[in-house]
Image (cartoon, rainbow, N blue to C red):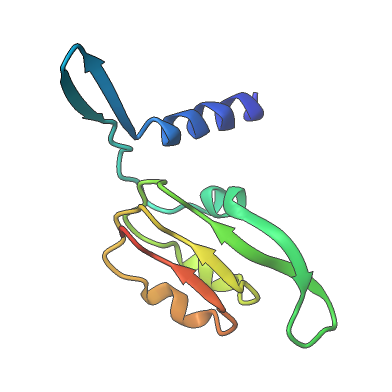
Length: 114
């Protein structure tokens, strides 16, 4: 069931811009993803790539991708993932990225379109 929901969400993300042609006329249709707050579940679903922590003593998630999720804020829980290095939060509706200040090892950050 979870895989089918993820498939549907992936399809919706791919369909955010559709061009429909009817003869010579073209009409652009945009599908808006409804705005929503960032939840612990959304964060967990966006985590990937496990790597060594900076001190080298353990392993942790190092990549977080929350692309086109319609997020209007970042949960305080995101600050608990201090070993994240690569974050892609593009295409959201984030007014601020202040919560990221608690993540000291960020190497790449994409917040374009937010």
